[in-house]
Amino acid sequence: MKTLHHKEKEQFKKLFGQEGIDRFEDRLRVLEVLLQIEGHPTVSEVHQRLADEGAALDADFVRETLKLMCQLGFARRSRFGNAEVHYEPLHLGQHHDHMICTKCRRIYEFQSDPLETLQIKIAEAHGFHLLQHRVEFYGICAECLKERIDRMPLDMARPGERLTIINFTGGAGARMRLMTMGLRVGDSVEVITNINEGQIALALENRRLVIGRGLAQKILVRPDRAKPGRPLSHNAED
Ligand SMILES: [Zn+2]
Ligand SMILES: [Zn+2]
Ligand SMILES: [Zn+2]
Image (cartoon, rainbow, N blue to C red; front, side):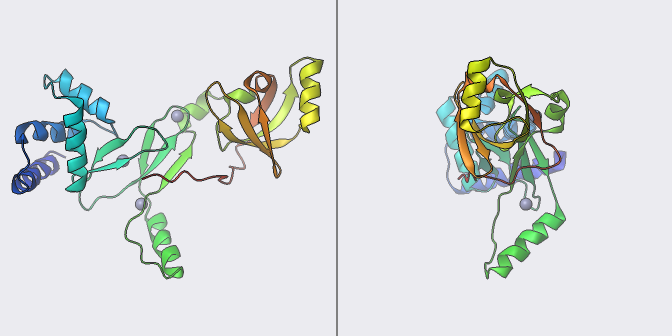
């Protein structure tokens, strides 16, 4: 890794010099921090790390430098289903894709030769010449799965998760409302959205149901791990 980082820095010096970009030393510090941080930091995380190391650069400068680094091929950016942009170093000749846990937001990297080959084949079958791709898996990581219990209230479920309804814990009024919606114990549902504090949208067969958070807390469900949900929607990002 040391020699790799050394090489990156040498090329950085050359290209940034060639482009006549100002404040070279400060920009080099941004690169150094990005190379040091393991993972996929946001602008504010890079900015914070620089401050921790005594380099008080303003956030706009850090953001602009990271953007320049993407333009010149030293970094790449992704949103990972988030509002914030994440950056990571781009090492030439190395490629990986990502799995994002929708519960803890951790980002895992993976590399799969069969998946890479398959993508080229799929593109070719459509007469499409593949230049770049971005594969992002969204789901629940092994760490978070360990913490999950077999029974949980519906409001704890994540988008994309398939569940079986095992009980209603509310009073007669709540049961009545759920029955009117057509929801029964034993039904298999898939979570479409579950936004903090908001309503939860479910797919029940081919119908959409929207349930308030209070009511969702009274529905006990069991996550269905054997049958992962087929994606209901796609979130394509930059
Ligand atoms: Zn890939
Ligand atoms: Zn997780
Ligand atoms: Zn990565």
